Length: 261
Ligand code: OKV
Ligand code: MN
Image 1 (cartoon, helix red, strand yellow):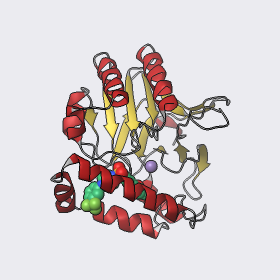
Image 2 (image 1 turned 135 degrees about the horizontal axis):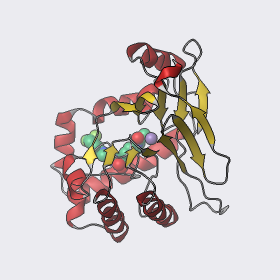
Image 3 (image 1 turned 90 degrees about the vertical axis):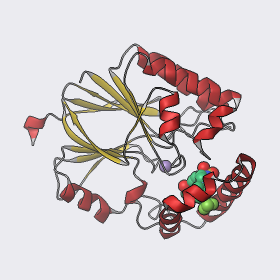
Image 4 (image 1 turned 135 degrees about the vertical axis):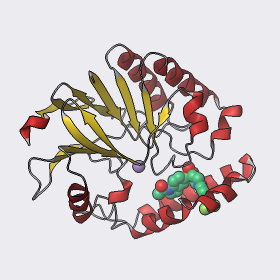
C-alpha cells in the first residue's frame, strides 16, 4: 500500500482562509510523497449540499481544483464528518474522489485499522447525539436539500450559532469519546489500531483491556487564530509504521505490523 496519509477536521470555509492556504500546501506536498490520501471528515466547516459546486465561492473552487489535481495522481478518499455530513457522491465525483462509508477497516501493511470520523463515540454529548439522530434521517435530509440554497444557508448559519452557544455549557469529558463506546468498537472489530478525529485532542491513547491496540486521534487544523500559531497535522501509515505528525511537534511513531498482535 506504500505511504498513506490521513487528515481530518480541516474545517475549511470562508472564515478561515489561512487554513485553506495551509491545506492547499499540504495537498501539494502530499502529491510528491503519498500513494493515497484519506480525509476523515469535517473537511468543510459546513456543507449545505453538493449543488454548491454549481456556483462555488472562490475558496471552495480553489480547494476543489486542488483536490481534483491531487486525485488525478493518487487515490483520494473522502469521509463525512459531523459538519459535512451532507457531502455526497456528486461532490466526490466532482473532485475524482471516492466517498467512504462512516466506518472503514483499512487493510494496511501495518495491520487492520478501524477508521472513522469519531463523533459516533461521543455518546455522552446527548444534545449532539440527538442532533445527529435527526439530521441523519434520509427524509429530513431530502426535505432540507429541496429548499433553496439561500434558505439552507440561513438554517445552517442559525444552527451553527445555536451550537456555539450550547458548547459553553458542555464539559471537556462530555465532548470527548465515551470509553465504553471505544471498548465496544474494539470488541466488534478485531483490529490492530483505531484512527479517528473529531475530538480535537491529538494523541496516541491506550485502550485499557485491549493492549496493544491504541487509539490514534488526528489533530484539527487552525491557522487563523489571533495568536498566530498554526495547528494541524496528519497520520501516516508507511510499511509497519504508524506516525502522528503535528505541526511544530515531534512525530509520534509506532511499529504496528500485523505480526505484533
Ligand atoms: C453542521 C452542525 C451545523 C454539529 C439541517 C436537515 C434540518 C441538514 C441540515 C443544517 C446545518 C448542515 C446541514 C452544520 C453541523 C451544525 C450545528 C451543530 C454539532 C436539516 C439536514 F434539520 F434543518 F432540516 N443541515 N448544516 N453541528 O451548517 O453544515 O455538528 S451545517
Ligand atoms: Mn468533527
